[in-house]
Image (tube, rainbow, N blue to C red; front, side):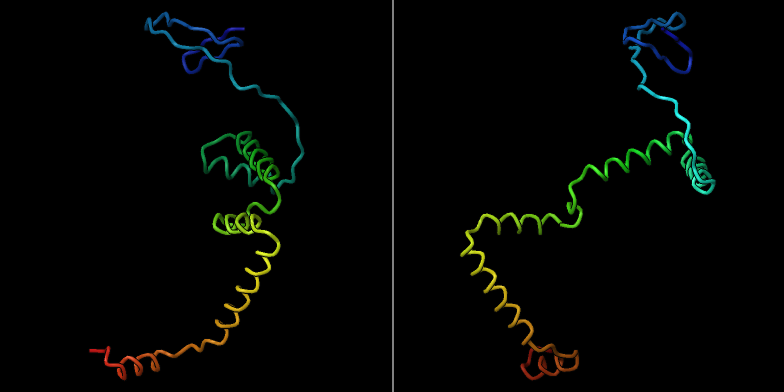
Length: 139
């Protein structure tokens, strides 16, 4: 099956095609495989798909296919992968490289630092300005 039109070229087997009008050569590639299906959607979902299609100047089929692609992609990612940032993931990998004893020591150190941070008093802006004036660092 070889069909050549002015707007698009589609064929079952890729091959080189010479235009009779211009004399230029082009490569005829096989179109992506499509399957025709019938689905039943709630009217509100169909209306939403139609609104998106119109807003994005796409077909209804493209909108629904894109939704399926995105849904399938979200299911391929391991659970919890989106929960961690790059720096947190790197920290966890460094922690897993430690021995159990080293992990306990790191945990104890983190606990001590956390307790020190809780004990640190925060100051109001007025107290900060008064401290700067007392130390002579304010002009």
